[in-house]
Length: 393
Image (cartoon, rainbow, N blue to C red):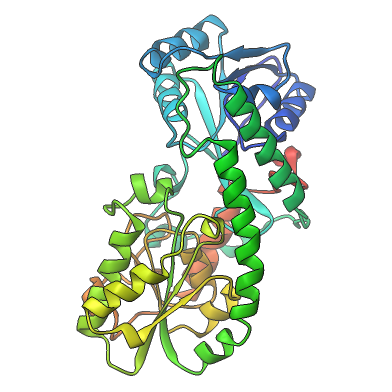
């Protein structure tokens, strides 16, 4: 990965991490390597999962954050910054201010390659990543230079993830009087989150029943596959021209109706993290009715993703990491946003209208080199809620 370098005698700032204690564990590791750590929090949830002896609460307005963080970086002679995500307001401003001061920033994100990996990159992730985007760069790599060390299963605890989210939102909510100006990147009411969580659990078991024979039915047909992303995904909001998932859905259906033979189907799969929040089935059916292809639409929720990818004619995405999985399964991929893997000979570069009738499969030798390089340079064997190889930082 992009090396963090020595931590001995370095002043390190940690901002908001994933919900839970991962950044506390990270901070403890950094300290064992000789770093002096500082933490800034923006709400009660951040406070709950922080050490209190070096914690600084930010309670002022968003307008004053740029000047505050600039002075903090200078006053404490910060040399490295760790944060989670690069598109949230506080994080993006911090990156800008740190860059002006020549301070290194390392960004955590969910893994590009799943399971058993998380992403850690210098300066930015996803479309802000500095990873090369030219096919020839990877073609010129020697496989011998791409050897990876053995990975361990991370065994993430979904109970721990749910427990962490629950307490994070409770403390965020009750701490509002102390952090009156905080702006969360999505809904922050714990009771609404609890409702979504319960509906998520209900729907998970509901879909397990109603979709019992659905996969076998789909596999009897010729279909194109569309994995939906979360409704509030920064990948959608920052790294694409789509305003909403609904806009993406209509774009796909309109092009499909105009260009695809009658014997082909379109399979939409909901994102599992949206299970309790969104159900696009009615919207998809209404749009399909508008374009006279309602009988060609299949909407699913929790079917086995690798099997769907193994058998699809092609995969269409905005910029989901499912696109990487699709390439792994040798599926042609069309990207409609911006993605680190949208590279000539990996993804199909034709327009969407031209893509349907002659989708191009990925160059597998190129993909294997790209994937190995991606893991080597940007991925750490670990989970935010399970085993994490801190020594790889």
